[in-house]
Image (cartoon, rainbow, N blue to C red; front, side):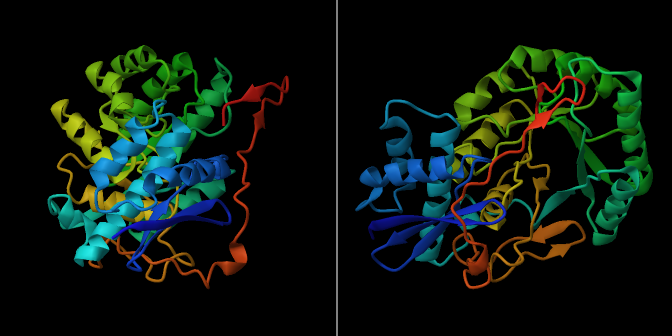
Length: 372
């Protein structure tokens, strides 16, 4: 079997899917995205064609190393995202060629179903309350919200009180038997993160996510030592080398690699294993589409230290057989490969050039740029 073509399809609002074609007619799917940089990732994927065309797609470990080690300049958000999409597609091809789900090729399942969580936000308190009630009604046992509003390096008592109000409301609506995480999104300064975490402790959240930007691990260590809430991070870390310092310094209790960015299924499996050595949980990041979700849950099924899986869409309008939520869990896939097939007729009217851009936030008082 040989790789013959790599093809990227962009679908509104901001999905990007990779199709790896072979000479035997098997097509592997991956999710090729980087928020606001989808076209650059597509170019990186196309640039890998000279390495991949004519190669056997089933030599996954070899091809991963060829892409990563064979290009001298390694990792980074763009190249790692391109490698991730290709890696997902190669696993899909391997599973389809052997007529087995990918998780069986990763060592087999250690659990029968996959716990997933959805986002709950709201531009105002009433909308926030309603969205929380909907999530409970849908059966989710875990929810993720975020610190609301952009923030200065230090903030007012009124700002802090508004954040506390939301967490109190959420805990009251979901009750003590459900979990929730709080995404700081790297938009909060370390000093403010420490303040907020202390105020959030009475609500017993499962984690605070990206309480600071990931470039300075020592700062994250300081935050982690200041609170009883577990710290989670990883969506902007790439490959096992990107997670090494976080683990060695015990800056986070939960690792959140994104299989569309960290190096794909192959690399995320190794990151999870590294986390086990430090007793860290594994909760893959995924604000993307159903192909990345499929890749993630195949890996989740095989990882002992798995915690929960982020899930934004079940694939309605994007794949032919959307996932089915059952009491906050997804069943293990049963079809060969990743088990998803794009419904290209259904989303044909949503095809575009992949030029979605990140929104820019500005502080209202001085018009200075804020973290998104």
